[in-house]
Length: 476
Ligand code: ARG
Image 1 (cartoon, rainbow, N blue to C red):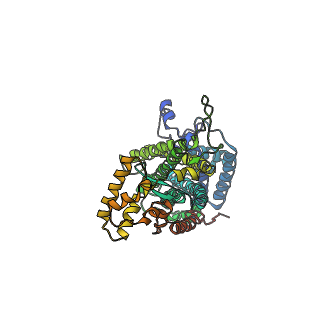
Image 2 (image 1 turned 30 degrees about the horizontal axis):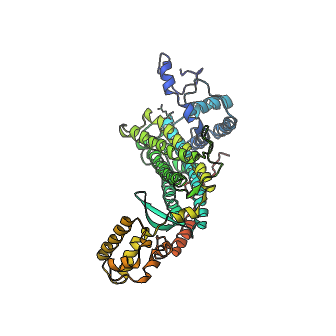
Image 3 (image 1 turned 90 degrees about the vertical axis):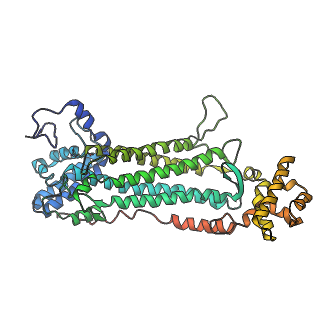
């Protein structure tokens, strides 16, 4: 006899009750409750499949399917789980019994929570990917809007956090757009990995009743059916892939946040933060703190931790389902929830930032055109090595005399290399430097405007392809 009072899905072979300490550890409803819409849907599809396999009559199948719909309505309004509801699957089974009585006991025929939870988690993940894509696109749109306005604005580009060369500020802004574009591609790939149906794998050996897995696949919107039941119940690659995509995206957002935080400091003054996404200090009245950006930077650590947690969980597992896998959802939900909080906050913080073109321009000095000076000599016929040496000498002189390159007299240039002419001073203007870099991917004006068009085109692609292809199947 199974334990009907507590509505356990197992227990027939046990003669004493489960220890309270194990029940406390084993209970996952606090985490997996949110899988309910997907568990209800896959259970409805399973009821139809069982009818198709001759296990349920049409009448029974319809009763269960409609009962599950009512269970879904109740769950949508909020149901408090009982202490005996081990996980969301047990809760739904109990509620279904309340709705339709004993026929509910037939639903679990041929399936196990092993293929059930894998299926529900995949459905949840595919939906999460669609939401992540939309949130990432919203942030990219803010970047595009800024970039459109910053095409004429020049600023230093840094390597080693040292001023290196002048660039269009739009070029800097778009340097944060493309990493997110790659993140969106990774999220779309994770969604495709999730789109393989495990239902029908049973506990580990496959369902013994002739259910149509192809119809299950179609009705639940999966794009393929798993090939091996042992693999299917223990495969969490899609979780790892999604966690990597999220961790990578969190890393990118952290770098964007770091740029903005530095640029917002008084020392830089390139950007001014707005007020909706900053906070004040309880002690220092003048402070405006970029908390949204700092929290974005900090949450990257969490996302990386979630990925590490999952990989560490998977690496030692024997094949098939193991209970360790129950914790995949903690890591998955934490990372996705965090990212769905961070993306809008970063988008909002970035949207209200104002750029200070004068401060950016003031950070450019003629010394940053040293490379252009070498190029000048090359254009006049010098070898790059010679040119580099001559410019090096000029830099030494300018540093020694505490003057920028552009403040040196022409005689210094003439002494440094015979090919220098009076027009050399034009080459010390930042505009001249950027305008010479129209190679695709460069910071020249036409290259940047081409880049903007490419970015706009990329953003018009919405990555929700893995969903929306469900067949509507009903036992009528
Ligand atoms: N709550 C479980 C999980 O999330 C469901 C699967 C339980 N399977 C089992 N054989 N006990 O992994």
